[in-house]
Length: 462
Ligand SMILES: Cc1cc2nc3c(=O)[nH]c(=O)nc-3n(C[C@H](O)[C@H](O)[C@H](O)COP(=O)(O)OP(=O)(O)OC[C@H]3O[C@@H](n4cnc5c(N)ncnc54)[C@H](O)[C@@H]3O)c2cc1C
Image (cartoon, rainbow, N blue to C red; front, top):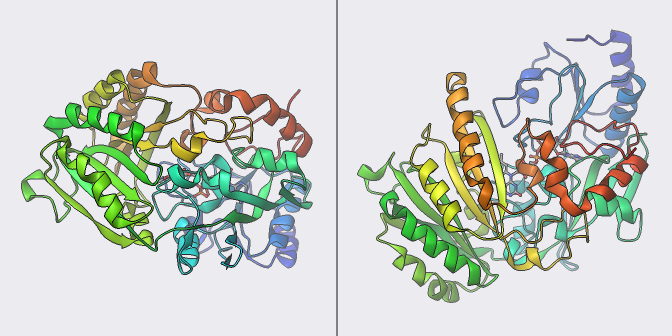
């Protein structure tokens, strides 16, 4: 690893308010370690920013010293681009301020916030914006790639609710992007995945949500998988926007509402959430109970923030992860067959195949309205390869790749940029589809030297 000259880092420290970490410093290994334990990189320097001005200083320092830059928000990205070898890791995770303005239904959010940080602040006022399903995920990376979760069928993608952002560009200047200021940059930010600069502050539209919502899990035996999945496909095609139901095929964790003899066996779980009146929700979910003979269910009215943490224990930091995903407009019989085949040979107890349901409001935005363009997507199928030991890497990766290949014929166009792995840079153009050529031009205008390239990279046009 390249060592930086002491005089240079000393000078940088004098301009920087946050913490600067070098290899060997006490927190260095903890901060460089991100969610996916498969990623093990060693930056020459870590700059832990506490203000927008710190971000400016870090960008200028990297520029002058010709350092590769990586940017860490929540550190969840599966490809591991938040951390680089030998360069400067700009860590934003200490910037966690959230300001909610309930009178206008808006929030400004700093880029180190997790979904839990943002939701806790907004839910104090009974407000929220669509985010993801795992509360430890970073708001920044999730938003810049598109963002979807329980509220998306009702209120759209996270980017559909982004009103503006403050951003530090590759030359160290700080600008604002919204519908009227740097509108092309704002267009690119909403899906462009960190290619254009470092966001120091997001502004979001909020909606009335909960704070209590009907949500929970229904678990069916794997033997009933085909029938449950076919009914799931039919049901989700016509359910109201307020309701969202996702499917997870995995081995049963030791959940207290499941009989002990089911623990560790393959199951089909339906996870659901209704954004509205609980009595109405009860009526709407009644047909799900007739999909088969459930092993058990745990459904009730609970705080939205509690439901958003429900999957955290299954998706904790520190395991080795290899994911691949497809977009689907329809959950066809072929896709269902592939899910059942590969869920029937899970290589570890933590591996799973999940189907996230989109549609609703996410589909009512024009594909060219912003960088995120996959508006025909009704389902995202994600294969989560996940295990503890490096000895299992080969088997787990092979399983995920085989499922990906087997389900490919049933996929539609595009891909979710936030679910691409380290080895999928060749899918970036495909992932964006119709908006890719405009993204190349915006990249050329705002980052002509490709200074920000530790990401699912969009190379400057020409
Ligand atoms: C367990 C788990 C559950 C998930 N669930 C969902 C889900 O329900 N819905 C969903 O939509 N996605 C989901 N995701 C995917 C998630 O959206 C991406 O992993 C996302 O990149 C995470 O953002 P982060 O800030 O935590 O990641 P990081 O790894 O910190 O950042 C990812 C990339 O974003 C860019 N970036 C981060 N911060 C900034 C910034 N301030 N300015 C400019 N660029 C920046 C950088 O290029 C960085 O490499 C999930 C991921 C995991 C691991």
